[in-house]
Length: 262
Ligand SMILES: [Zn+2]
Ligand SMILES: [Zn+2]
Image 1 (cartoon, rainbow, N blue to C red):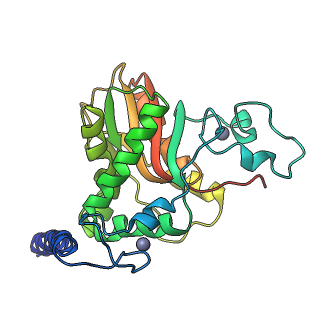
Image 2: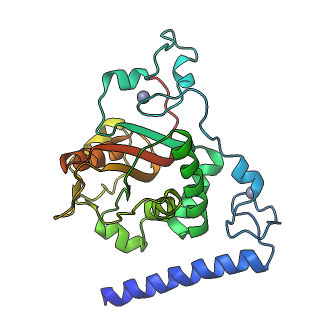
Image 3: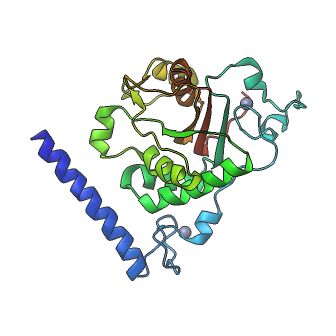
């Protein structure tokens, strides 16, 4: 019964994905963010203006966590001269560095929702293109690409892992091996909405593991997810990878929640 339900769900998801792609090529469909008519025959269901509205991260960023340093110096006495943000000066992470394509705001929040709940694969490939640019610009050294996993139960409900939709085409663009099943999430995400930052750190502590028999000895890992909020998830995954022998771990996400000094 459960198996049949999953199968039907998968077929349904495949059909809706296929028809979306077909429709946007054959008929002038509306942009999924602003409803403007899509004039280019693109399979990405978002118009050029909306794609161009995403706030790509540029300028000076924290060497460790990648957040814009400007956010810390605006109106704050301790204007930072350092290339590491005040937060990273006091907190250690399991990853060596983290970088993102753009700020998690406005249109990008809605685009990530599309990817997360409607399996818009062409959008995943478009994001992968932006992340490949970041990886090249920042000279992010890696041997393998690994997605942040969902808990098995969550992935079964959704039918896919949204990080997969970004990480797999990214590995292709970078010419690196893709290791989709290297990490597993052993502890499910709590159902209740997490409010505090401390709760976020608590909820992912010990939530990940490597699959038995996994070999990451001396490998440099590019760890990919859709959004980085506190860095707790990337940190938890990175600690497991380092524990399994990885030489380095770099977190790479499409979006980055804007942080402000509290
Ligand atoms: Zn639009
Ligand atoms: Zn930092």
